[in-house]
Length: 490
Image (cartoon, rainbow, N blue to C red):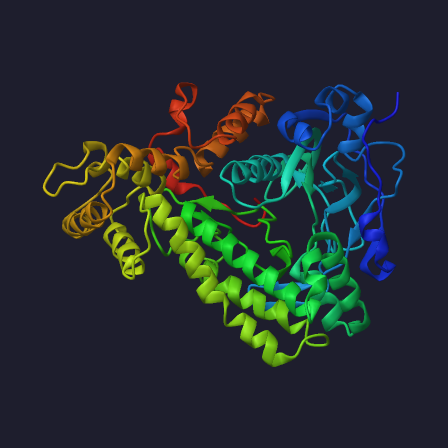
């Protein structure tokens, strides 16, 4: 029996070989399935049984097959890491094994993460550990469940082979899926290494494959940047609206398609804190929750500079200046929905800002706050829901004042409480992939029990609908959750 994966390697082959190197995966010893994403397989037009019941596919997706046809490739890119330019990065532990086309014409690229060294691994081993691979597998799918653009995860394989990080851990490989894995850093590499003749080739590739409407513009490359700018503004607005912290927003971790990519030291806010830092390596707070829109704008400036051979500086600057408004428009739209508001008001920004100011320092759980807020009546003076008030640690005067303004706004809209609650619960998740839930699943998986991974995956596919079997995922995190430490090795 041979593998039954419908893979070709066509999409990136239109680019010169200076964009990539051909590589060969390094086999794992006795690989096994850790998780299988049957839902995604079906979305891709594949039969899950044909993918996951074939032992040769297990070998292929763990980097352990004897032969790979087509030969995998790893791409080269550079980037600004914590604000400092690094000339050569690239796919140091990821390789593209092919792409497939679904019946609807949608093309998917398949990438193995953790399948061994590439020319861009530098001094690393090219491996991924089970801990970090579980985090990526589950969070990419949880983000999809929230309706936020993201790479996806088709499969997770493991092996008892040792991989050394802070301590010895076991190896794993994630099969990542995306329409494209092109990053800001691919443009940065070609620009900063003086290969300017390759920049229009890469831009043309993106336009032809993913932004065809840009071809009809007066300057297709300016139109391309506008689309990347817009998608990225909407992406970070989506992150802020669910309390998601990426953790390492380097330019090489920024997708040209506006996807959430590279799940390392991420985290969803538990207690609201605008200054929350989810990556303990980020000692300066560069990528803190409240800084994300600003650093993403900064990253877009780095991307824009790479288009200077094709677009005038004045046009790029003008487009960059649109980012704050695009972000704020997308963000306020999401926040109105979260608050159940149906109209636009000139004071919306102040209403949202005052709400979060009333939460700051009160250790209010971000996710549960918005769920419980749906139970607040429109009428001034009526008691607040007890489970909402019990979220607060400390005085509530500022919040009480805000509730008065909020209720006034609801009455001005003639808001129906029942209909509003239904709208709010449709956009405010009850379940998010909290780090402590991941830690529990990881500890079980270390002992060969993968059931909690599957359970979390099923829950996060539909995070807005209350389900009794997942009641334990919809409670306040335990005290020990505050001590969870995640870093770039996560």
